Length: 188
View 1 (cartoon, rainbow, N blue to C red):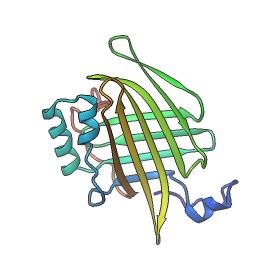
View 2 (tube, rainbow, N blue to C red):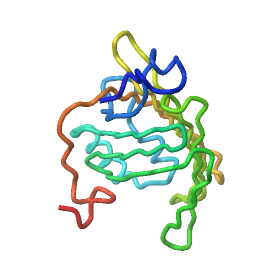
View 3 (cartoon, one colour):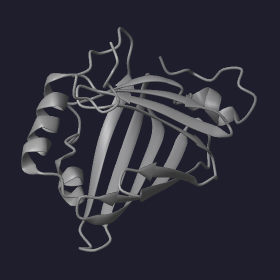
C-alpha cells in the first residue's frame, strides 16, 4: 500500500501528501482509461488493440512503484503486460530493441516520491514516437490517487494523443498473467 511518508527525511509536504511507493490498481471507473488512442498512434493493428482493451476490461492493471530521491522503479502487471523499468533520475537510459532499434528514456522529478516525468523516444510500427508519461500523486479526502497523463506524438505523421488514467491503492494478491503478456514467456 502507498506510504504516508511520515518520518521521511525531506519535505514536510511528503508527510501531508504521502509517496507513490507501493502498489496501485487502475481505477477503470474513472476517466477514460482505455489505451486505444495511444496504441493507434503507435500503429498497433486493430485486433491487438481490441485484445488489449478486453484484457484491461476483464482483469486488473497493477503498478508497483519504488521511488527514492535518486531512482524511480515501476513494475507494470496486467493480463496483457508484465514489465519493469528502473531509471536513475536525470540520467538518459538507452535500450536496444530488436532490429537494431534504440529506445531512449529519461526520468526527472521536481518532487521525488510524489511526481515523475518520464520522456521516451522510441520506434513504433509507423515511425518514431515521443512519449511523455507523467505520474502525479494527489490526495482526495482520505484517499491517495496516482494520476497518470500519457502523451504520445508520432514524429512522421504529427498525430498526437493524450490519455489520463487514475490509480488507487491496491491491497491483495498479485494478478494472474496471460501466457502472452510481454515478459511472461518462460515464467511459471
